[in-house]
Length: 196
Image 1 (cartoon, rainbow, N blue to C red):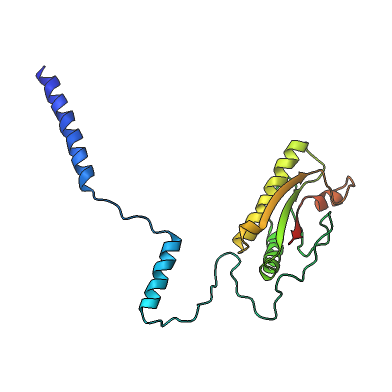
Image 2: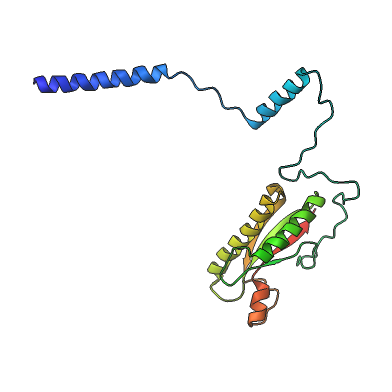
């Protein structure tokens, strides 16, 4: 009986101590959002006597690269026909059964991102395509992975995600309908349809 009372007393003491320590921890300061941090920086700059009266150029973040006056304003690009072929962005190719961008594909993505940075009004549908081998379901899933890989690459290169949508056509819309290695290599791709 003494043993049970002392263990109950020990448990009660432990609970009391835990509650006491929790109450002594103090409150955490509220999290500061990015908007609040920007507001505080602006207020501090104006309080410092307006030393920064001119807006400072922004050199990072999505779609924030400064454009020179001789660069395109975003209205001088062709819109592809309904097939989307022949647009201003180059397709990227994938290896068989892969959704990873090769070094060559990454170089193409850098050029595509630069074009999109210079044409801010352009929006893009990123299409994932596969060759004819495999089931419809498998190729739709693989096409989605390819489209997302291409979209994620553009986002990592500074293109705003809001400008990009993805779709998978699997093996349903081949660029080359032949059944050969050459045709299959053409069909394993991410294609970019540009709109305004």
